[in-house]
Structures are given as structure tokens and as C-alpha cells.
Amino acid sequence: TQLLEQSPQFLSIQEGENLTVYCNSSSVFSSLQWYRQEPGEGPVLLVTVVTGGEVKKLKRLTFQFGDARKDSSLHITAAQPGDTGLYLCAGDSGAQKLVFGQGTRLTINP
Amino acid sequence: DTGVSQDPRHKITKRGQNVTFRCDPISEHNRLYWYRQTLGQGPEFLTYFQNEAQLEKSRLLSDRFSAERPKGSFSTLEIQRTEQGDSAMYLCAGNKQGLHYGYTFGSGTRLTVV
Image 1 (cartoon, chains in turn cyan, brown):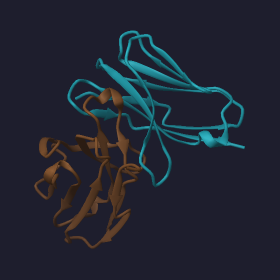
Image 2: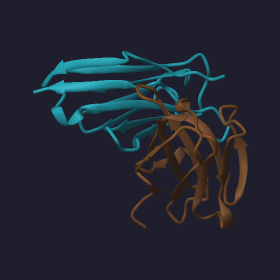
Image 3: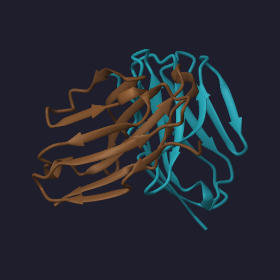
Image 4: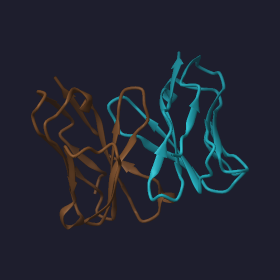
């Protein structure tokens, strides 16, 4: 069973601060994705990373795929209240479906 | 196509009743997935279809659960003899061939079994 462990599970910070969320596994993934989910809605895809060591930037969000393709991180610079939500990582292990982590619930306080 | 639609958004049912949920994916989504999400957890895989063929079912999917995708378009998920442990958000997601493109999720159906 491939497991994706996210840390921290909960994070509450002030507007303007920086933060990093981690997604770790003992398994290798051919790609890894990050989603954001708001209450009562389905997750929305933010990014897909494919190559070991890859870094992608989406405005204030920076995503990194580990060299061994077993882990990933999401860094948010100057967090804003609109960044509040549940952040999910999901991996493709070649089994024709995505495996999700348990999520990181992020709260940005004004 | 404006996205993946799920109906109903919310369902409250008494224990022992049967419920059916519907998912309408985007037309080019030849793959359709069902996931279940409980509070504070990530989505757990239930089953998926490629066109009309159901290719995999999770061990989470007991005999009380059945899913169909007739003609490879919309899909239904039925739960028979509901139990309180079935209370969860049921998410449908579509995908073009290739997980690299990611999933497009619907808004989910929130099931509460009382």
C-alpha cells in the first residue's frame, strides 16, 4: 500500500508569513499533484510535478518534487486569507489511480 | 461543458435505506473515478471506469456498494442498506487518458446516515 503522509496536519498562521507543507512517502511516484479543497467543494488541481528535482511556481506558491520522486513540498510566500483551505497531495504510482495524503488544513488569519 | 456535476449535493437518509448518487463528467473524460472522503481525511479510492468498463474496485467497496457507467457517460453509485459508517462526502472525478492531466472533481455528495 502506497501511503502519502502530509505534515503538518493543521497550520494556522498570520497573514504575510511564509509556510511550507510536506508530503512524504516510502514509495516512488511517476508524478505527484497538489490540490486545494474548500469546505463543501471538491478538490481543485493546482499543479503536477513529474521530474525528480522539479520546481514549479504558481504566483506565491512554489512546488518541489524530491530527487527520488518520493516526496514533495509546497511553499507559500506572504500567505493571504484567500490561501485558507485543505491542501492535498496525490501520487500516481502507475496503478491507474491517484493516492491521496490526509491533507493539511491551512488557516491564514488576517 | 462547465465541469463535473454531482447530484444531489446533500442527502440525509435513515439507516437501512438505499441511496443513489449521480455524476455527470465532462464529455471528453473517458475515465471516471469515485472517491469517499471523511472529515479531516483525504479522499479514498472506491472504483473507476474507463468508458463503460469498471476496471477496479477497492476493498473498501463492500457488497452493499455498486457503481455503473452505462454508455460511458454519466455514472451512478448506489449504496444499499446504508449504515452510519457510510456517512461521508462522495466525490466523482473525471480524467482524460493519463493521470498526468490530473482529476477534475465534482462538488461531491454529502451523505448523512441517521
